[in-house]
Amino acid sequence: MNRLFDMHVHTTSSPDAGIPEEELAFRASSNGLGGVGFVAHVDFHPMDYCVGAFRADSYDAAFERALAESDAGLRLMKGIEIGEPHRFGDQIARAVAGRSYDFVVGAIHWVGNQQILDPDPFQHGDPLELVEEYYRELLTMTRTCDIDVLAHAGICRRGMCRAGMDVSFDETALWPGLMTELIDSLIQRKIALEVNTSGLRRPEAVTYPTQKVLSLFSTLGGRMVTLGSDTHSDPWVFYGLSEGSRLLRAEGIDSATVFEGRKPVAVPLP
Ligand SMILES: [Zn+2]
Ligand SMILES: [Zn+2]
Image (cartoon, rainbow, N blue to C red; front, top):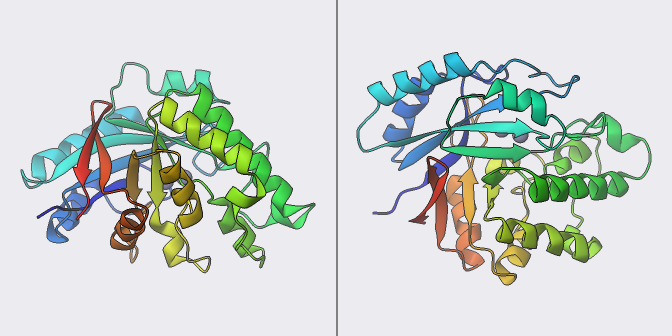
C-alpha cells in the first residue's frame, strides 16, 4: 500500500514548535505515514520571532536520536526552512556551514518589513498590491536561491484572513504572467512546489497554494510536488495530508517528492 509522506514538520528544534523529533517519529509510525521530513526554521529577518535561534549542532543531535529510536520502516529526512534566503544569504551560509541536509525549503514570511502572516500590513494600502509584491519575492527567491522546495505559496491569505478580508481572489487570473513565470522557474530549476495543508485548519480553509494555482502548475507541465502539514503542535499534527493528496490527484499529479541528500525521489500517492 502506498503511504503519505509529510515533508513539513517542525519540532522543538524550532522555537515556535512544541513536540520533539523522536515523539513525532513515533506518531508518524502510529499514523501509518511512510516518512517525515523535519524542518527547522532558519531565520535572519531582524523582526522575526525565530531570528538567530537555529542551532545546527542540537538539531543534528535531535535528528540522530529520532533516527535511532524510530521504526526501521519509517523514512526520516532532515530539512531546513530558510526564510527569505535571497536576502540573508551570508548569515544563512554561516549558520549551516559544513552541514548537510536532505532538503532545503525556501519560504517567504516577510515582504520588506511587512510580516505577511500578520493582519497589520494588509490594513494599510491595497492588500492585493502586497500580495503581488509577495509573489514577486517568491519569483526572485525561486530564480536565485539554492532550494529544493518552495514553501506555502499563497500563505499571505493567513494575514488577510486575520484582517477580516475576503481571500477568495485567484492569483492565476489577477497576475497570469507572473504566476506563469513563477511556475516555469520552479520547473526549470527542478524545485518542488509544496502543497501546504495548514490552511485547511484555518478559517481560509484552502491549501497553500490553492487548487487554481495547482491546476496552472499541472497545465504548464509541473509534476514535482511535496505534501506538508506545517505541523508545529497539537492538535494539528500531520493535519490535512489526505485532502492535499486528493487535490493533487484531481489535477493529474499522482506522485509526491521526498528527498535524500538533496536528491528528489518520487513516491506514488495513495
Ligand atoms: Zn513558513
Ligand atoms: Zn514551516
